[in-house]
Each structure stands twice: as C-alpha cells, then as structure tokens.
Image (cartoon, rainbow, N blue to C red):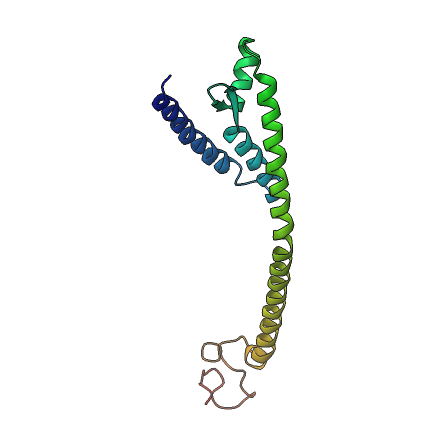
Length: 164
C-alpha cells in the first residue's frame, strides 16, 4: 500500500465515520440529555480511535476495526493494543465530557432560575390583567340581542333597545 492509498483509505474512513456519527446523533436525539450525550461520546470514541498496527512504518488503523477483525479471524496480536487504546481514549473523552458538564451546570441552573422567574412574573401579570378586566367581564350577555326585563305593565315590554 502506497502513501497515497493509505491517506485515501483514511479519508474514506473519516467520511464514513462522520456519516455514522450523524446517523447516531439522529437516532439519539429523542433521548434524555444525560443519556444521549454519553452515548454520543461512546460512539465518537468507537469510531474515531486509531491504533498502531505496524510500529516500524507507523501505520494506524481504526481500533474498533482491528479489534473486531483480530477477534473474528483470530489473526494478529493487535486486539489487546486496540482495546487498550479504546479504553484510554474513552477515559480521556469521558474526563473531558465530565469537565464540560461541570462547567455547563451553573449556566443551566442560572437559566432555569431566570425562566422560572419570568414565568412567575408572566403569571402575576396575567392575574393582574384578569383583575383589571373583571368589571367589564362581569356581564357576559349581549345587551343588543337579549331582551331586557321590562317593568310589569310598562311600555315597551318586548322591545330590545340599546343602552347609551
């Protein structure tokens, strides 16, 4: 395999891995955030972790592919190296994710408090609007369509007259 073939293979793998990540992101978008994000980290680690296969040439290959092929065909001794690379990159990725979560937590807490405060203020404003409209909303009858009760025996007993 020439250097150009090696780079072309890695380029094709990178495009395929990003496509698989996109599909994985679409499949996990309905999940609860604290389940969705770690699953996405696991997918990224599995798809994007390289491992060395030939130390002399410094040739790398995807760790998940090397592990699967070595275990399936029982050839080579790179499965343990690939598994250890997956574990190492997984620990690093989850450590970075944990730091990201710790940095994001105060911002989410502050945003939730602001949202609750805004909802409480909106509810209070709505309650004040209802109280302000109460004198006008007390009579739900349409005064032009319903006959007004007339005085017994008085003129205009069955007529509908507008009030001014």
